[in-house]
Amino acid sequence: MAKFAISEGVLHTVPDDMKMALTNHPAIVPHWNKLTPIQRNEWICWVTNVKKAETRAEHLLRMVEDLSAGKRKPCCWPGCPHRRPNAQKWFK
Image (cartoon, rainbow, N blue to C red; front, side, top):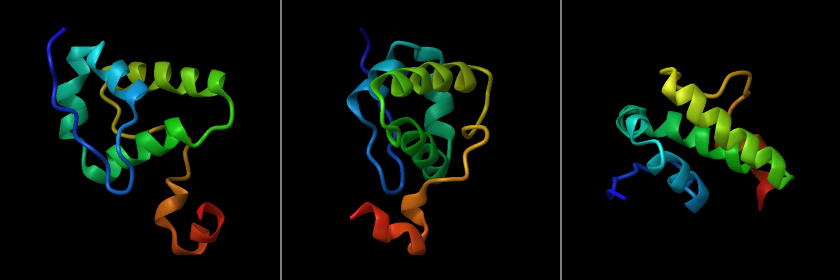
């Protein structure tokens, strides 16, 4: 398998399962790397900020589908709570 450079987000690093999903679909890696760091951060947080492993797997699949379709951020996501100062207290 070819080695791809996967750009990181602002507050979050790309977890291993997300890197695998991206590198398993090499056509979306350039699109991922063209996203702004904040947009990448939103995807990372959207995938990782779930409670169940099944939900995380569903989010990974949808991320691949949405990025393949050219989308730049997760639909219907209020945004990474880690970037809001008044939400910081919940994530210590």
